[in-house]
Length: 292
Image (cartoon, rainbow, N blue to C red; front, side, top):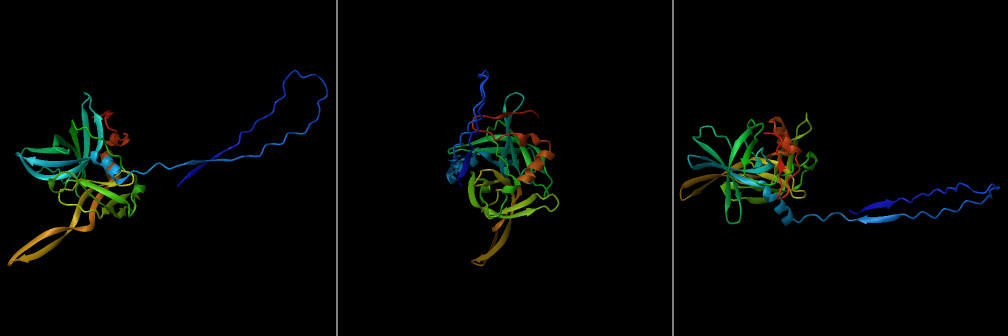
């Protein structure tokens, strides 16, 4: 759409000079005002990012997680950077949101949480510390502190952006492999009748095991719409040479996620509301911490 700005004409007042001779003033007719001329200035809209440009913008917000015990990987998950700052000593710290069920360490001996960033030819590994967890299944979110991880923080979407049919990109690490993308749309938005806020969303974008904690991003704005929590599956049974086999297949449109409103509520309730007040990081710069 092209917008128009209308230039208003300037009004000038005629003022007589002091010290005029004391003679009767001649009566003259007022000069006729010039016709008003309106100027129309066309302001073109900013060009929209291509899919490739938007993907390049989204990718740096994402990491993959490994929960290990005694040197062995027990489970894998995904995560999104929601905060980036420097601690009191000036060291870089990133804050990653993921699922609580993905980082539960009950029953594990000497557990460690690995946070990996995939490059073209290598993966950079950091150690993460779980600093806040929600109650599953009502609030399946967790916050991980990652010292030394220098990645930009994502911008959370507003509730108004959660519209059915919105084109989305899901960034996650299914099956513990390197970060992968899938595309689709928002297929359902469930609203809370009391708070009038979204409490659950669904997408038809394909995902797989290990995508828990992955981000669902708006293709139009690059903002984070939701965090993947899980998906419903259908069991498939078949027989091969008198042997029975069965496996679970994700059902299209049944990937459910915690909307950005839940992420905001979680961070505020756990004492990390300061992360919401920060502007998204640009490459090469981080915000400075004011708290813990």
